[in-house]
Image 1 (cartoon, rainbow, N blue to C red):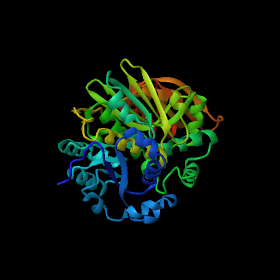
Image 2 (cartoon, one colour):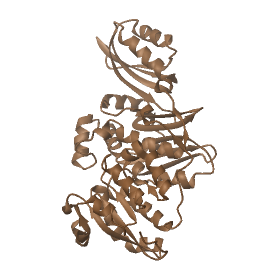
Image 3 (cartoon, rainbow, N blue to C red):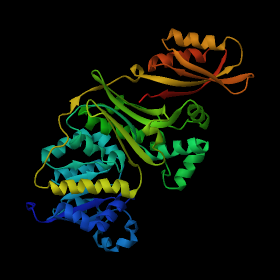
Length: 434
């Protein structure tokens, strides 16, 4: 039987995964040892074992950690002296199994693994509660921004109404550079990869999947909701062109990949997609690899959080913060994540936005009337219409709609596509008023 921990003892840590975040965790624990020690005195943190396939991932300046290295996760999970497992290998399996095994072995778990939490979070939280062990994941949503702690432990006196967030540093960097330099998507993506801001396979970032996982986690915690992630719509930035970013700037808008979540009657409206927002808004001016989160509360007003959304030290700092949280409450378990109520996600076709529509048409009399008629039949009205480019055979027309139902706009666009005067639908981008 594992010996009962006393108040004054070493808290032993096993780290599984020495990628970017894992290396950051080691650096923070080593360089900030004295500072952290004062936070948890009289207890002390001690890294007991480190798991990875490659011992060369141990930072050269911390060669002493080589003595703690193993390539066997089971060796760490089965060590009765290890109190906290830090899972940082990423992906779904075997990470999920490691987390569950650790909790069932009555070890606390800290992770940054957004995919595991999004797909199996409810199950894992139930296991953690049953075993009275902490399962903390602050670094999974917004890297250096302590947003989960804010909504679970600080903003608890008033109801949260809405979240508008930039949750992926890679896509924010790409869109920021496209806006600043007018270069196309592929060129900026290559630059982001060369600088280490984007993975060699950036698919989960640029197609919106990473942001989808993060807003699912944040919505679950913020709204205390049990929801089906399969009902959440998400869309990426692969088809964004410098042309539309430029047209948006001329209209006073900035393009961001937004994660949106709000309570709408008995539903939650949660979605991820590129959106134009006013260039004067705070979120519009959060650029590069930074994340930004706007929380709207019933009585505490609007709060904006911003911080680095990528890198070893930003994410590593939140992992270590979770470790410290456990250390300070080691013998006094608190269930931070409870009272989840089942809630339905609003059908995406029923959601409402304003829309930026760029439609390529034949430059001839009556075109606007034909297009306007199709939209009017579907209860979509225009706030403004601007012709772009020189008059000639083919021109772009940019339409800004009033607030309209998603399904109505999509139906109108299907009708417009069949008009003889329309060459193609150049781009459809939602406009979010915040």
